Amino acid sequence: MKNMSLHEFVKTKRKRLGLSREEFAQKAGVGLRFLRELEQGKETLKMDKVNQVLKLIGMQLGVVPMDRSCLLEP
Image (tube, rainbow, N blue to C red):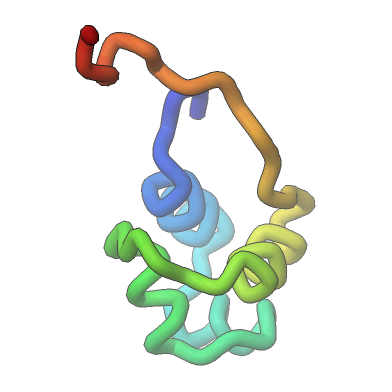
């Protein structure tokens, strides 16, 4: 699961747990729409709600090094 985007990570973990989106959202205490948007890679989401989802799988948001190859050269 190294170098996986957040939305791919959450979707993969949910599927490995054998949970539907509805079940996972309910267990995490978030709405189905929020989970759907998270799994689809929406770029603007509330961090506290993302952490609610991640808490269910024993994770939390954190800072990671950026892939500098995607930055424009000056």
